[in-house]
Length: 498
Image 1 (cartoon, helix red, strand yellow):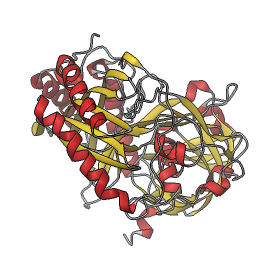
Image 2 (tube, rainbow, N blue to C red):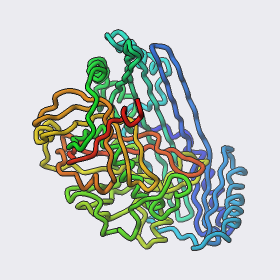
Image 3 (cartoon, rainbow, N blue to C red):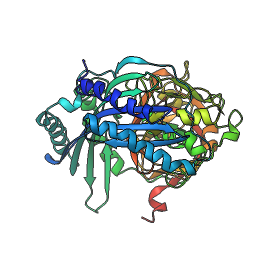
Image 4 (cartoon, one colour):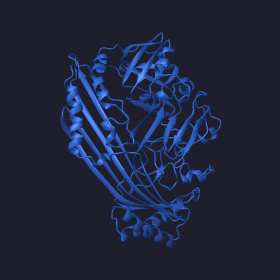
């Protein structure tokens, strides 16, 4: 699909205005982003529209390096005089910050990318689909669930985002990009006569696809919706888990979140260096362990990837003009890399940036954000059923739900959508109230089998938060099914005092 670059001519005219003024003020580096981000959220509950949001964020942001310090300024007034004034404002910020800078800011070198255009793979821009069509699709799913026995309430939601971004810097890089992302969720709730209740929702992950995703491309949402009532009924009468150590076979629909929290965030270099300590926390995986820290089992290979097709963090170029790349974070179970932006790459002698700078709006300064952080499958690995058949006493974990992890990304606890008891190699029915708990390196060291490529799924989240003021980014995490030995399982209901 041809991308609607509605800001193209305007961005081309504004770029030289801001950059020439920045150069005249003595800036050794300056970069201008002109962006248009459209975000839509539609929620239908029990057949009625509960929420309909359509927000458009348009603006220009200029970041400069002057006198060894960074400065940033932004405006939503997209005309020449306002954008030219950004240079003066950004330089004033750099001057104010300079006395507090302990080490002059240097950005790692990056080749010039002049006139590059990148469009994410999609067929139908989801933000261009009429609201009536969105509501009709969600209402149909809700009504289908409400007709099923045992379903008390049904909710259907879709979030759709389109992002147009124009970038230009003093080095000569000029890029334009367009990408979309979509996340549909359908949830059924049952309330028993005694007041007990349970919920069950679809597992279809958010994705960098268009509206075609809700029409059956890449996922069969209709089939998922049809399964919810039976799954929910079985969950409501399932026995509560007995706490203790279990072997866990974890489906990608759950494991992606454990990867996000215990690997993705832990291996952001700004966290490892303590830059996020005041808000989002630090990381146990400090730089003195690079090349030495045993993160997990030898079969563990984790990459950061800004190029994966339909990945939520996939781009052509990041918000510092760095071309998208794939890079190793954990290889053979050993910590071998971090996610970087240009400043951290240069400051710590790590070579070229691997393209992890991002701002969620032109009005926000870019910061180091997560790539698509993914666990590789075993090329000759088993199916999920075969992982189960090789497990004597365990639990199959499917779907994500709540989680908790400490400020150093070390101690964690995760629950899920549904759980199946494994006895002598067979899944024999659902369990309730399961939560698994571990420390990051202990958990990943207990990994003893990876599923094959057929089990690999690209999961993810639309709402990864970081920074002060807070910013939100979308990110995917691919992984296969995997088995972990002797993981501590808690009874979440008992732990909550219920």
